[in-house]
Amino acid sequence: MMRFYLVLCLMLALCLYSVARAASPGAKTTFSEVAGALMSPVCPGKLLHDCPSSEGAQLRELVRRKIFAGETKEQIVRYFVEVYGRDVLPKPPAEGFYLTAWLLPFGGLLAGFGVVFVLVRAWTRRPEEAEQSQVSREAPQKAASDDSLENRLQRELGDFEG
Image 1: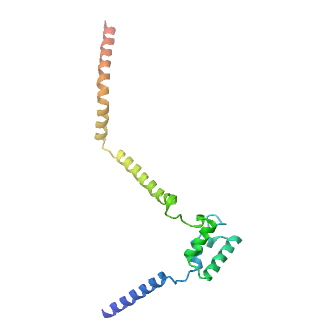
Image 2: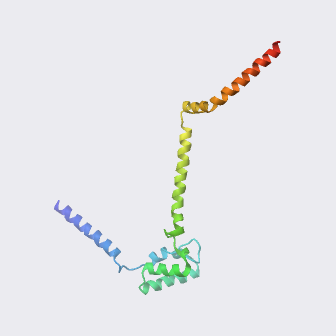
Image 3: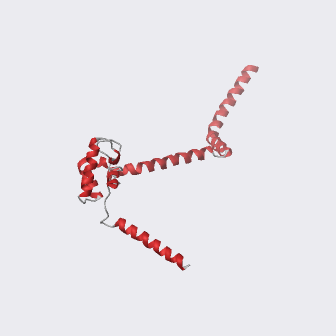
């Protein structure tokens, strides 16, 4: 049992060490982190890491030089945003007008669920409830039309027989 606790403590210490090392401000910025966090301004719809053009290769080399100079991922991304605009970000920032890009899909889903709920509820209503609501809507109209039809029927029968 003592061995189990010792192994557990060592694993916990190792996990804490790796998390602290990854979160430390002196953590080394890697090329794949930065190139995977930028869209290529010369290859639409592709990450900078995946862009096959020669301009993309030049931009990747620029990223390598900036990493070698000691710049962080945030500094390099900020540089590309300043030079090429927000189009180099793979996802829109969650602020201002760009917030609609984050909220609109959820609003569409919510509206879709509402429509489905209303349709399922209408389709699964009991037939007695549907008939009662139908009869209650037609009752006043039926009484007025029945009297006029009854009078007309009596009048025409009288004309036919007499």
